[in-house]
Amino acid sequence: MKLQFVGYSCFDEVNRIIDELMSSIPQDIKRKYEDAFFCIVVALRELLNNAVEHGNKMDAEKKIICEFSLEGNILSLVVIDQGQGFHITEVLDKVVQTCHDRERFRGISMVTSLGFFIEVVGNQVIAKLDMTKL
Amino acid sequence: MIANIKDSKLEFKLVQDVTASWVQGKLEQMRRMMKEEKSYQEVVIDMEEVEVIDSIGISLIIGLYKSSCKLSKDFKVVGLNGRIKSLFEMMRLDQVFSVER
Image 1 (cartoon, rainbow over the protein chains, first blue to last red):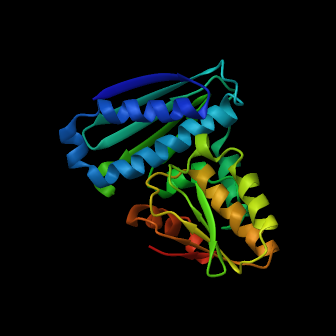
Image 2: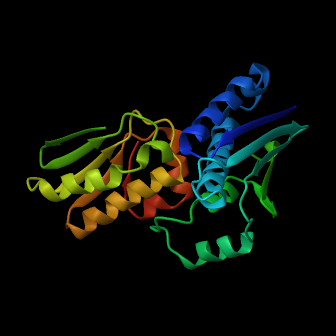
């Protein structure tokens, strides 16, 4: 199963994309992975927020693209923005250096803590999850 | 969001998704209330009606905690559903401030 959504760079659009995604997923899949979908939506929201805030610098004229696919037990979330890309090690290094009560630098670490493997290719963030490991 | 003072507690009851689209501007608004009110000893964030939160929402909660510390007030978060409480624990926020279901 593969779904794609496109939106503008604002947080209201993030809400809209997630609502549309959840409406598009077949009920039998939602039932099968009911508990997992809470984590998936949390992760996706973080990736989309990052695209809006950091990738597209809150420029509402720029677009974000979200791709959701489920092949067997492997879920893939791909979020594409119109920014310059980043090195994930730089983000994760900042997380290591800060403490639990930090107010920022939480998004990517939340996604990895939920069990996703993240890869950054240019301006695409690819997050994969083995649903059997949840 | 509903704010009231009762039994020496300044309570903020959050009644919507605590996500990026809602959070903007709220921290300053809530901090102003915390500074203006004097007759309380503890800040309580009631999240019983919250089903969705993101890292920007968590930043709001941490910001309120830090403001409470600066004002020498106690702080706790209550009413979390099981999933959001697990999220807070995963992020070790339960090691920073009191978190209750």
